[in-house]
Image (cartoon, rainbow, N blue to C red; front, top):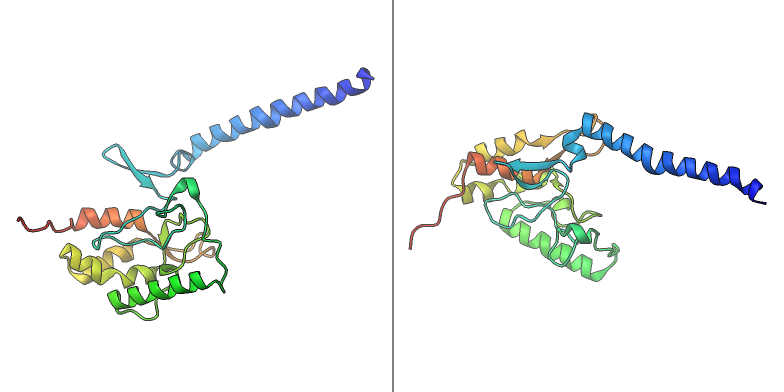
Amino acid sequence: MFALVRPALASLGLFTVLLGLAYPLAITGLAQGIFPHQANGSLIRIEGRVVGSELIGQTFAGPQYLHGRPSAAGSDGYDASASSGSNLGPLNEDLAKRVKDSAAALAAEAGATPIPADAVTTSASGLDPHISPANAEMQVARIAAARGAPVEQVRALIGRHVEARTFGVLGQPRVNVLETNLALDAAYPARQPPPQ
């Protein structure tokens, strides 16, 4: 009986070594050699300190910052250890109320109608690092006022950070919130509060 099983065990061992060790090590080595930035999490560093990732959204609440879309990941949003959407269906009353309240607050703040969908809805992961150009445009006046910068210059800076569709056909044009906020900080440091 062992003689019948021995070839299967030998094949299983060979495939375990090839697919469980050799293949992952080869792919990891190729990724590190060809795409080191992406293979290491697309981290953004300032003066050697990691401030975030191009791929993971984070919360920006101050009026001087571009705000990301709402997040249902974790109790406070943008919790990478609790990545998920709200799992509320389109007929759910809680979701409808939250979207309606968020849209009313944004309309009162920005005076923009219609409100872009991504300004009031969460992404499937809750960690989307991008917003639509329309969402970014809606926030220009608030950011310019908070930074004491000309509206047209803030609009132009944000416009330079609009990413085109991937390969020209995949997805939609988008704005990376973290990268744009870093550019805003560099170009127009937020006004300091007056001394007391």
